Image (cartoon, rainbow, N blue to C red; front, side, top):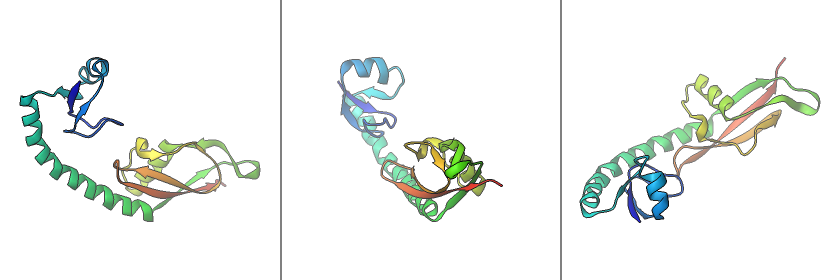
Amino acid sequence: MLVILRENVENLGRIGDAVTVSDGYARNYLLPRNLVLAADEKNLAMIEHQKRTLEKKRLAERASAEELAKKLNETSCTLNRKSGEHDKLFGSVNAGDIADALKKVGLNIEKRMIQLTNPIKTLGVHPVTVKLEPEVSATLKVWIVKEE
């Protein structure tokens, strides 16, 4: 089934893209959540008009994301945690902890943007990737230091 995306859908496309999906996926998931429109002539014409305005918005969002990426590449955050033997933490540091630390510095980053494969469980400097846009990401240094 050919559909037009109304929202960005992970692993499928961006707003305004015309994509082919299985009938069941469209009927049972995408259409009930208003993520897509059926691709008929009227909707294609409407989306083409909206694409031109969305392109300007995408460029502005990408420019702001690149600017924020530059700030994040230059930024490091420090988290104090209790640790035991061999510099292992009592507990761990996850994406939510890093997002809270960045908010205190003045950077509003959502925790879903922070790409951690595993929680941080040791003291030291850890590089963390922050995915701002599908094409824009930054690397942040997170310092985990021993709490006195």
